[in-house]
Structures are given as structure tokens and as C-alpha cells.
Image 1 (cartoon, helix red, strand yellow):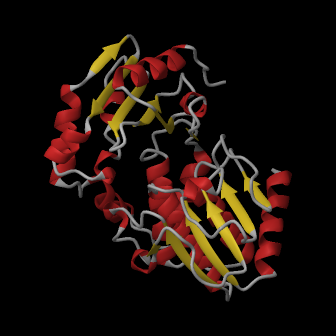
Image 2 (image 1 turned 60 degrees about the vertical axis):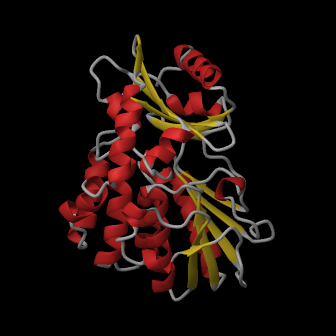
Amino acid sequence: MERTHNMLEDVLRQIGQRERFVLTSHARPDGDAVGSALACCQVLRAMGKQADVVLHDGVPRIYRSLPFADQVVQSSRVIGSYEAAIILECDSIHRTRLEGLEDQFLISIDHHVSGRPFAHVNWVDPHAVATAEMVFRLAREAGVTFSPEIATCLYTALMTDTGSFMFQGTNENTFALARELVLAGADPALCARGIYFAHSEAKIRLLGEALRNLYIEGQIGYVWVTQKQMERCNAIEEDCEGLVNYVLSIGGVEVAAFFRELPDGRYRVSLRSKGKIDVARVAESFGGGGHECASGCSLDGPLADAVRQVLLQIRRGPSVQ
């Protein structure tokens, strides 16, 4: 804990020495990436800094109602004069898919077990349940008051990254943080409604297509969708988010996988675990990463080869310690 506090102090010291910041996160951002970036940007502004959020893929539809989401710049390149880049939830510049970061002073804030020190300053804390928790600690250490808007962004990030407080690693500290954010003005029901009760028709039709391709092999369940199925449902990439959880909800299934065919013939794989198998290690073996219970990666097709490789790696373990 002392070491992570020293890293936090180093991050705050570097922020204090600069005025203009660009913030970003990984491509295809999830709730923690979006919520943490939006909140961190406002924390910096409250500290008297200039800050902008740039995301390669912009803000997914289900997060566009978040405060400040309309201020996010969608771009493939960082344009403008900045003194530093704060990269959240990434283990490399490559994950952002943004050009123009190479010459920036880089500050990395990440909580994944697969986090790697690639920046000039690296604050990596795998004990944090979400990057949102780290942004909360940064704001508190900086003496920033939590507005209802900042609290809403952080609560949404926390809620989504813990699988609605169901993933392994959720503990009393998680709920203590949630309590702080609710006291600061986050509305739990409103946050949940925008995420879990606002699906597109295309997503539900795509779920139907995926469940037709359901296979169970022992404790492993998996589904897939083809590019043609995506087009037939008029679905976009973000409509795939969370479909893997329907497979994990099956009793007896310990690990679930969702294979999505990409336009170039490769497959993007979402992995979920109930806790016995560390799927972050599985994803890392294919160049991906994430959490012990929620991770992802990409690999070459055809589908049969991709499925065989992933299932083989799952069966090999490793178990969560």
C-alpha cells in the first residue's frame, strides 16, 4: 500500500509541474475507460489545469448520457499542444490506437494484473477494483471536491467494471467506495438504467443469433457471431458488449467465451470466468489481457482454429490463486 501511495504522489507531482493534458484510454472503451477518463479530466480542471479527452472510437452509445461525454474528441491522432498525456487502463500506447502520443510525457494509470510499465510515470495497482478507484484516490489526495457529475462518472465506471458488483475481487472496499460516490451525488438507479435497460434492438437480435451458436463442453461455454450475422442484425461493434455474460449465466459453466468475426477474418474473443480460472492469463497468451474474471484478446481465424486454441488454453488453467 505504501508503494502505491508513493506512485500516486509521483503522479500528483508530475501533474503539478504541468498545465496542459490530454487524456485517453484503450480503443473500444468500456465503462471504466470512459467513466475514469471523463472524471479524471474534470478532476484536472478542478485543479486549475487544461485537459481534454481524446478517444479513438469515441464514446459508445450507452455511455453518451454521462456528464461531459459530449466534450470527448473522437480522433485517430492527438492534435494540439500538450505537456503530458494521461493514459488510463492501458498497458501500451498501441492499445489507444492514437497517433501523436510517442513524443508526449506519459503518465499511466492502470489497475489490471496485466498492466505493464511503459510510460515515464507508471501507477499500476492490481488491488484496485477499477481504474475509477484510482481516479477517486487521486482526486481525494489532490483535495478536489467530488461534484455529482464526477461521482456519476466514477460510479458508472465502478459498476460496469465489477459486473454490477458481481465479479471476483468485489469486497467491502468496493461498497465503501460506492457509498462515497452515492453520498457525493451519484444516483445508482439512474446509472444502472442507462447501461442495463437501454439496449438497442440490434443488440437483442444479435444475442438471438449468438445463442443459436451455443456450445457447452464440460465447464466451458462459448458462442460466436459472423460478420454476416452482424450485418443482418444491423449491429455495430458495441452491440457485442456483454453478450458473453449470458453464456456465463448458465449453471455449471465456469468459463464463457464469445467469438466475434472481424471484417478482416480475425476473431475478437471476450472471456469471462466465475472465479476458478484466471482468464486474464488466457488472454495474455494471445497478446491480450484484462482481469482474472473478465478479459479479451484477438487471434487469427478460421473459427474452428480460434476456438480450438482458446479452449486448449482455458483447459490448461491457470487457476486463480
